[in-house]
Length: 210
Ligand SMILES: N[C@@H](CCC(=O)N[C@@H](CS)C(=O)NCC(=O)O)C(=O)O
Image 1: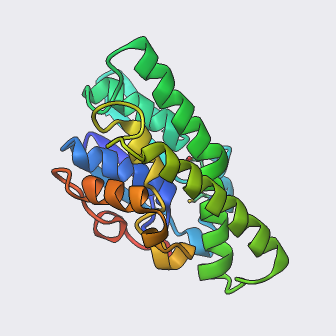
Image 2: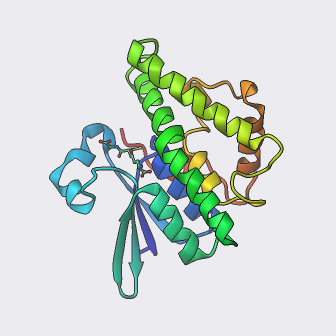
């Protein structure tokens, strides 16, 4: 058995954040595919593992027993401490990383993922609710683009879990309705992430949830 098991599926940018972290760290991990589109996260069995009914879930098979954790931000924090990579080096960095992981979960990923679901998976682009969420997602992209002007990484002079969290959905520009030419700092930053040793696309790391 691998050291880490990740409940995940390829269409999930939230799961991708963790899969990418594990891969960039060269960790010994295996995916446990979640049949999201068949409703697995709504099943009693799944909610017994994660009452929130969400992917990703990480199970760390430790000498002192299995440790199970959900919420990509919590998992990334845990992994950065256990694996000694992509974490903070000072108190100021610790809170800068936390600030951006929280912004990601509240604004960037939540609007981007919801907009993508409506646009790409439900074909609802253009309906008023979808347009509202799209506008909120574009606001968050602008915030990120402005922040990245003149800097290479989100929260430190090197890549951290803040970068890994925030890029979760952004390698699917067509699916989220983004043209990165309009956000040049994001485009350059995504290229830097793509060039990290061990980078792989979501579909190369996880099985489809279809
Ligand atoms: N904030 C959570 C979001 C997780 C999340 O929304 N996961 C989606 C898949 S990408 C999910 O499982 N949704 C199930 C549902 O909302 O019913 C995280 O970062 O882990």
